[in-house]
Length: 129
Image (cartoon, rainbow, N blue to C red):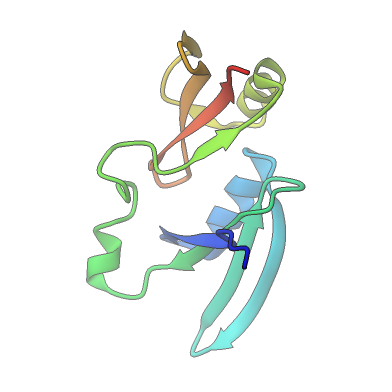
């Protein structure tokens, strides 16, 4: 029996703003945006051709509000792998993605930390072969 992670949730302040940022600045695709009742929506974004996706979940209570911008304790919460780091770094920068640092070369590959709309950190990474 095979398993894979289909999606993971990211708490956002506003679904529409998160969709706009993720699709414009990060180049992700909007895969689904469906009403779920009571004003809730099922919103899924992902890099083009990716097997895993991000479920954007608009805050529903005061506890969730405290998680916006710091969903992984200040560390990178996901790792966007690429086989064209220089191209993707330049394209994301040109589209307005916010990089928290310049790219750097590490023993495991080339990496730069970027932030989502709400300030949570993510890594753009080209692993070494």
